[in-house]
Image 1 (cartoon, helix red, strand yellow):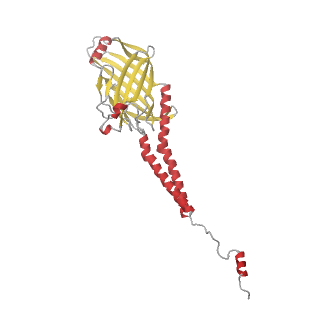
Image 2 (cartoon, helix red, strand yellow):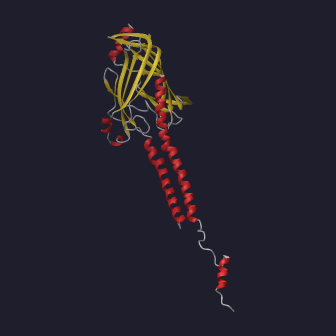
Image 3 (cartoon, rainbow, N blue to C red):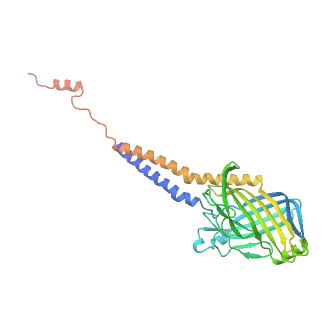
Amino acid sequence: MRSRVLGSVLFGLGILALVFAGGLAFVVAPAAARLPYDMERTQSVAEAPNAQFLQITNGVAKVDTGTLRSTVTVQPDAKTTADLEGDLDGSALVWLVGQEVVRTDTNEVVSAYSTSYAVDRRTAAARDWSGQWLDTGSNRQSVKYTGHMYKFPFGTEKKSYDIFDRDILKAQPARFVKTEEVGGLETYQFVQEITNGRQDLPKDRLDAILGQLMPGATSGSVAYANTRTVWVEPTTGQYIRVQEKQSKTLVGNTGQSVTLLDALFTYTDDTVAKSADAASANRQKLLLVGVWGPLALALLALLLIIAGAILVTRRAAPTTAPRHAHPRHAADEDETAPIR
């Protein structure tokens, strides 16, 4: 009787463990693979040694050579996120992003921008939102973001993804190339090649540059090219390393051309190490609730169910000996028999 009760309890605990395993795999894990509302501010630094770049100081334009440092800061905008409505409410997060590029020898600012846009909490792709804007220092303008910029989806796959380029204001595909270990993690490498881009500058800024760098030209444009390589930790979709080979060339209607930018930006070692540490910690959490936790609970459930089933179905052992089984009993019976 006791074995049957214990077996029933073990069987019930096994079913409960199986339910918890399913809950972890199909409820908790998908919820964990989403950008949190309270995500911490992140900062990445890239440097470009021996770069050629346009420097405008007090209205004077000049092409210099030196080391550039780019710092990109990404932080959530909790207040604006709370005001999102419709299909964005609960599924999107508003990011405030800023970049500042300085020359390391003087710490003078070469270029800067700030922007705000909504990202999908699961895919990290830009969402259609009327509140997005971009400010490059001269004026704040509306912009329509698409694709990815600072993160890939949770569960990144070996396929192409669109990356939005701020200079040409549109997304271009980044193709999967190979897997590679970076910062102690296996990453997916993606390459985006922009070869015939064009950067639109405000007319007054373009005219000022033309007048100083290309006398005689009455009109012109800025040709832009960029080979962008990103190394992504696939479970989290986080960037571990980024490298950009950028070039900008001013082309005048006279046929002349002047290099405005020729630089190879690469994440610093410190940024790679911090990115890898953060991705590793987040990866372990996702694997715990999405893989190892459900597997452990499923195995425990199987053992409990089997043990419970054995105890419930096992036949009870006899509790009394059969009659006349012991010699003493036979002797006792002889003593009580009548004397003949």
